[in-house]
Length: 321
Image (cartoon, rainbow, N blue to C red; front, side, top):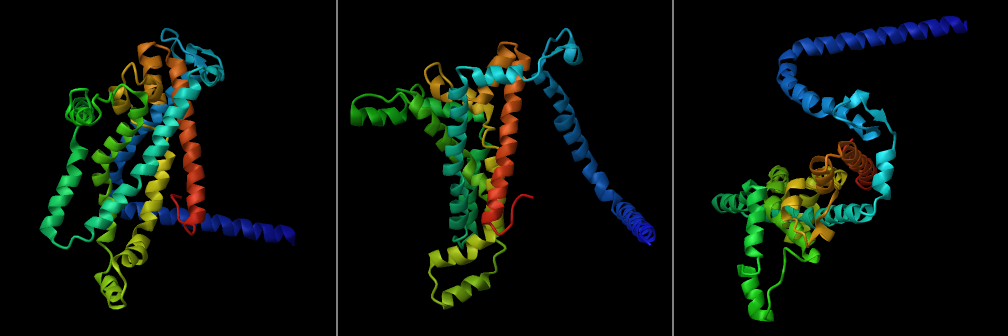
């Protein structure tokens, strides 16, 4: 009797799998053109993102360009232990964490506030001009932005001319380590906040105007309407953006940090990305730099999963996945 029941269950499962496979094939044939449009993006992702991951093996080897990846000696976690035991580890790791954490805390709310304020502008022409003004800094090259910072914050620059008139002496913004972090974060907000607000502006455009009209009739003020109508609309987007930002908290852009570095602000400006560049490309220690970069990536994945779980619990089960 049991064998008969098991046989029927197995047969039923096989029929369901065949039906599911057949359904998938029908959907593929029906939408094959859409899959063809998707193919270039998938191929590029595979070629430039997944295939190069093979090179991460050198993080576990005593890599020699002459012997190649497979011919180099396997050393296990030697390079990871070397980095963790390095006297520079605490400084580099904390610099990276502080710069990312404070950048996330201070920059995350700004695009939301900009979108909420833009949503209150009723004249289309005025709104477009404001948006153009806010989006423009995003298109300025990082090199140009850093050059502007050095000019404006130099000892003879316009900012220091005002500071000298007040205090009697210039402030060494680009040399003192304590200023580096705030200059980096504030300049990031200036260049990116306007562009980052686009997604929230688009979401707020879908809010039914009748909801605001009804709230006005009920006597709700501006803050109450934003709290009970606008914020619930963009809350799922806020959750996803926050998860992605927190997941990449250790992935600070290398270019800007490296360009802003001086010999005197290194105690604050040396981060994992710049350290990997100096050790890997300038010193030629490819295996060690690969291990440091892989360590950074693992920390990012752990943060992404952890923050996603926390946000799902706080956001009624809505998260990245």
